[in-house]
Image (cartoon, rainbow, N blue to C red; front, side, top):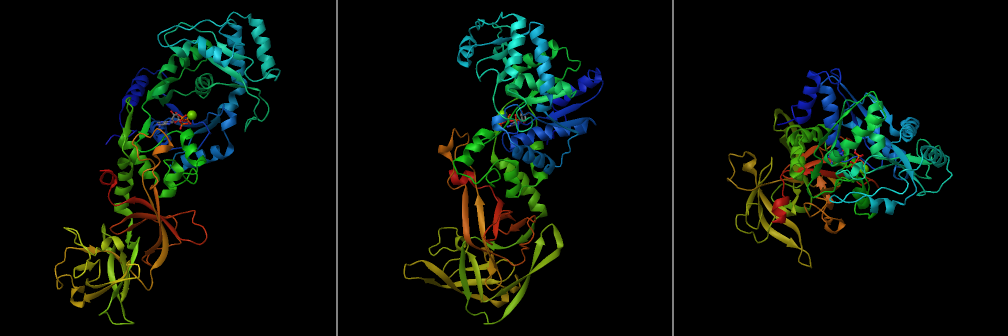
Length: 546
Ligand code: ATP
Ligand code: MG
């Protein structure tokens, strides 16, 4: 199993840099989210990578908010990001905001204009796009490319002072319109935006673009290895160009790795926001969302997410990961740690007619198979509930659970035989009449039966709602909301669970035997007790599909 702190192509590069003392043997990484949404599992990959590498090399890792698009960003997002990183148990060494560098960035831009490396262009966004050329055709110089330095300096200052409307002017680097790398064809680095910024208020009427901001922010923080996803590979030339031309003393090394893509999911804040706006889900922390806050509410542990990031490893090749890989990490963890109880999703009443009225007994059941000495007591009496799915009036072949005349074992208790099926006027099954074999309390004395089903004691079970979750999208690589999985949430409103469940403990994860792993929903309202299914006992997605 590869871990981010094991060796990979990035640690190989760092080892080489350390051996040549390229950064004096220092390692300083950063996680640079834009606060325009909540973090998702893809960000978790980047968080684990950056923080684990810092840990491995006794280095540092910063949290930096890349906050240069004020219209999409907010304090709420900043706070959620801090919370999520902290929940993953990572401590940043320094916290920074790209907006803290607005003055320095502005000063560097002026330097570039003075040195004939940047100019003010009055071309519209469409013109700039049209003249940029294509992969096979070079771009064409803008009519403003040779604007005198003094004029560019004056207009840039006037832009800053708010003398112009949005789109009237931009500041562009003067590199090479015929470069084979389109990113080098005089990229725009500043545009006018008359928008209040959540941190700098109305101080700025112009905002720097990502490519200009990011490399300089890295250099300002003396980052050694700037890890980013593959789509920035073509931007590295520009990154290096800017650092060189502003003659910054620090020269961070950008290294690209493959983005995490999860099947049956979308992995971009913009697309996740669409799910919320369209009301398909009930917010960023909806337990179906691949967000860190959604996974937390669903019942995933920080450890399971970090374990997942270890398992998928770090490579330079984009590929989809099945949801089953993520689910397996939490399933394996909870198999070892979760206490066992019983719960029925769709209760069907069973009356054990030969069980003495007004009597009750206690059966013992293990809390967790990995601890042989820990038991719980469960009451059982004349009336119990079983799951409707464990009964079939006309059993199909190889159906070993309950059916008329058939004997099965009530887990941890004794054997029952179905004597009679009771129906209402509409013909729906409302109750089963069964008898029990009192001898079978000793499993060796009763008949050997193939079916073993779970149950709850009618008298003292707890009424709850159970939410079952499944893939967000039916398609492995969803193109849009069309393939939203309408069955991604199934609410079981009449569920009943064993009274050994501590409903006041919102962090405790249980295995409902034969069903899956569950945790109390932190957002339950109207006094309804809701339990979220973290993950089922087995992955059934493939069977359902095929
Ligand atoms: P989104 O499309 O979700 O907004 P982004 O890349 O624009 O993604 P940022 O907030 O800019 O989001 O990302 C912060 C860091 O997380 C960046 O270094 C980015 O490369 C990394 N990152 C984002 N998505 C993924 C992913 N799916 N897998 C790995 N790293 C990712
Ligand atoms: Mg983004």
